[in-house]
Length: 415
Image 1: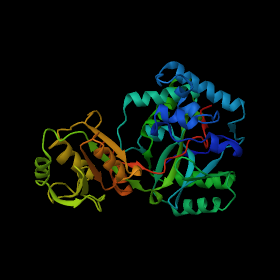
Image 2: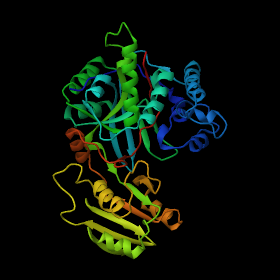
Image 3: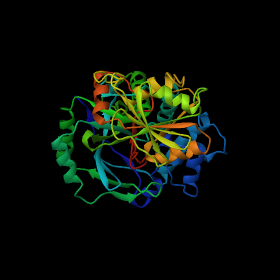
Image 4: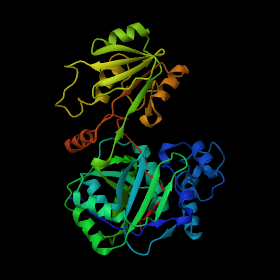
């Protein structure tokens, strides 16, 4: 069963929240962060992308950069740009995109639940990326950014959140960068807090939707602190890390598409003929063409779009991994035809989140930067949960959740 607890959040005053709040550290590069934070001393990028306070080209993994993050975090607190709540609370965080709103509960998840697999993952993590986030957690002694969890929807929790969201929000703004709405409420009532904690204790598992490296780093640092403390009793704040938990029926996964630099020595005609061995191939013309269902792909090549439908027998509906379109395309197109065998390291392939639209695929192929693009139908939440429950791992670059959590609305102190 899932163990969660309320916490004393560290938050910006209402008049500064829009200046403090930022996109997550891993969705933009240093130059983009530097540009977005220009002229804004309150931006959280000074803490989560502190290389922006050094000359262009400074390695973001240098020790002095991590130290700068901690210095900036301390400065934000001493200046009153971030202030800690006096009492432990839960929070409700709502995100609105394209007229649709999803409501999450901001909680502290339990390190042991991650270590024992009650918090389930669907992606592998890389040790170098884990260590980067571990250094950031260690130096700040805080979870500066939340992770994004899903849970099986629960009517009683839905009703609690619905009632809370009728109150005047603590924060309510539309982010300038993406036009998405962000609304935030405090939950102060002790009875409601206890009720939420009790309901989660009945939920068998939580699922990492986005933030596998942050989850791993937060849990590993918590475990480190436990081992380093001879007086550890299990109730210390470092036994928990910050997460925003959304009901699974409110979440939408969008497509995560592929671009390739070359056709592995094949001509266009040879490539299309090889595709016909495992796919029904139909030319669709020059207008952007989007796949309409599972096992349906769209290909953009030399100014034309094509429909690709995987033939029966090329996938296994009873295999939670084999049935995925990312597996089908990886095995039958990228590997078998194009010779791209390692999606994590091969420089001949790139990935584009569906939030950018299929026009971005067309643009990069038309520019000559890439040779062809492959658009996939998005994975479903049911597929993600089935895979996590089975203990399997999805192939790289399978899921893209949008909107992303805004960082800086609340921070969790490990003390």
